[in-house]
Length: 193
Image (tube, rainbow, N blue to C red; front, side, top):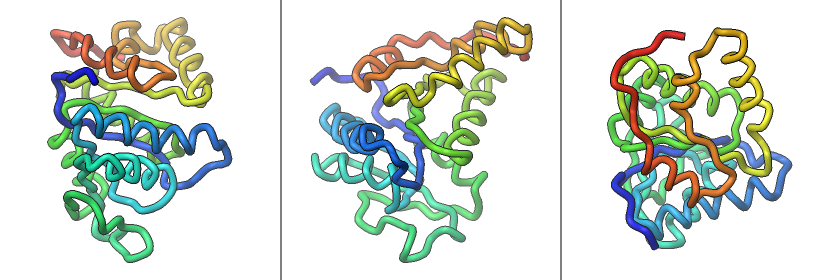
């Protein structure tokens, strides 16, 4: 197994199971792969949906996983209590800041509004030069095809600079995605748009 320069990686993904068995299984496989690569996973701390599949994959390989969950979501029905580490934050914003601080890189698996909000915020922070960490999208079973098309349209309409679009690395394969994150070279200055 290849060793990567980043030691921790935040995973943004759904707290729902979804209806696509390929995506569901791949969430587990991602956790398993990251554990085998000795990359500590930082995620939202839930015991539900794709989030728990990632956690199961990590824990099944005796990997390290830190959950970060806001206090209002920390109920017996939602929080995963079997993690390597669990951090409780005051609110959602503090959760994102904590995940940022604990992570050397970020990936988004399929998800809904929450996943997209986390991805967009971390992309925006990178665009503004607030961090220089690599960001990736795992395009499981074509889930993000329409988003990739939208980003290209944003560039063609002059509302997103191509160099800012290139802040996000995309692959349908976790190993290839990590290789892209490893090779990522951050922008030297802030870019608007």
